[in-house]
Image (cartoon, rainbow, N blue to C red; front, side, top):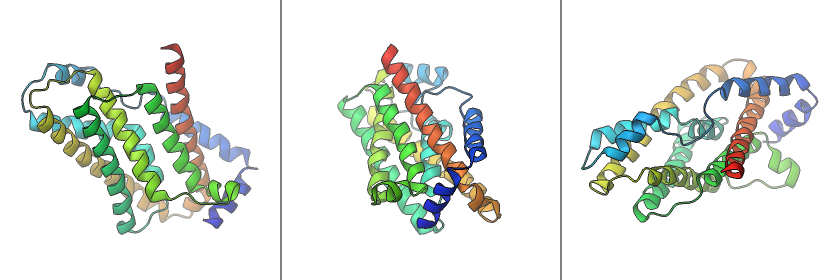
Length: 240
């Protein structure tokens, strides 16, 4: 990690690198900034559905993950410097356990929180992972947070954010548990599909000489994305 801390220190002097990161985020966030937004048609379907609808909810779960850029940004940060499939599988499993647990718990118990606050914390999870990839914690504070525990804990927040959104739709109690399980299965399928695409792209990029040169800019862009998401949510909280 000290190697990347050196990159971090040197690149701080490079204004062009910062400009590239900001430009990338301008492109990335040219769309709706609400992390757990659900398409209007899907909202209506969730609200009007009743009974066990296994495959439709599998589809909705997969669609949510594939289009849920807050999840994808965090996963991108998590696997950025992971090369072995064993390590990737471990971290993705921890995230999935956290995400699934709080989603099911939140909906079944009816416990919710302010959606803006939860989504702001999710934005901070993206910031955390980018700073971790840059070696900032070791350099600034002299310690390295436990990345496995952090992935699990932030997974809890990601799932709780989705549970809060689902509760707002007042989903029918008829077939609730099977539908939630189906939705969660879809989420994990979507996560695997998205992860596969990310790994393929990362695999090609890692084989080029530009990977280490541009690793800093990519993580600055990731960190900026997290801060933008936090800013949107806090603004929404202030004006709500």
